[in-house]
Image (tube, rainbow, N blue to C red; front, side):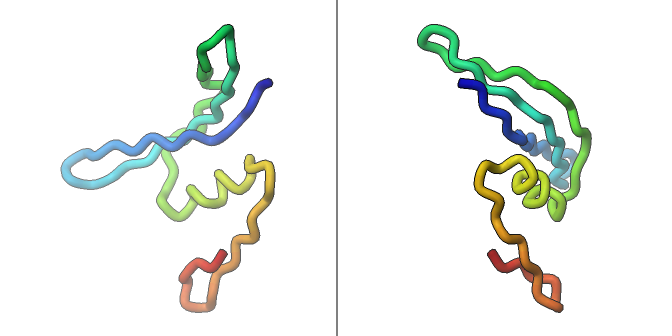
Length: 73
């Protein structure tokens, strides 16, 4: 079974967090699971992460924001 998902890599530079996104494929070969990067999506902001993950989720969550910008799920 092949599974695609968004993988977020967080790195800290000078005390500030930076996020990078990749589209990754999971494959089971014999008794091991191997991950292969299909596409490097580049740097993303913390606000973009839930939308990227929702775009590739099997069950699409409802992403709703209040007027003040706080997220509700």
